[in-house]
Length: 183
Image 1 (spheres, rainbow, N blue to C red):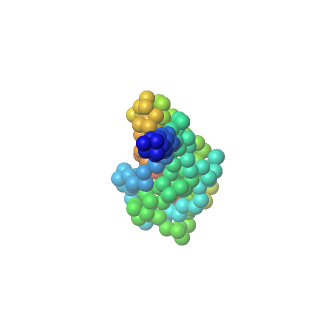
Image 2 (image 1 turned 90 degrees about the vertical axis):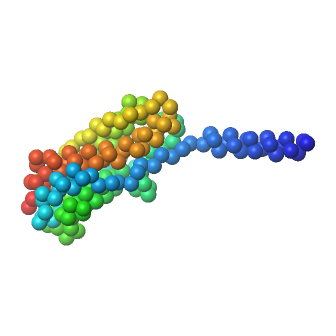
């Protein structure tokens, strides 16, 4: 009987230990935006390359969310690589991407942060062309949050991908984007 109680107590202790561990919230993989692809298709016949993206805080691939756990990018890539890869995906689907293009865009993620309490992603991006021009865009993406940490952090992770879609939309629909990708 004493041995059975010890086993139950050990099992209960293990359960408490596992249940109290922090969670990790993965941002979904990027999905192309139909509006972004449509805007970029107007550039058909032109080729655009995308070089490296840097960040004010380089190499960050997770941001803590309350005391619950981190918001992480898929595959452990940095946030700047996530945004770069999203832009490349949009350009490829629009059939205007080429690694050998005469114009190369590079970028800097000037700011990327969120508030899981107010339900907001803040992304600021500067994209520079090899032709010397640059554009800065910002997105304050609002989403529904929650008082409960587990739910709020999950909703924050799910909201990053559409926030990135919106910042790319602001870039490709910017009145100066044609000059940015022109020779």
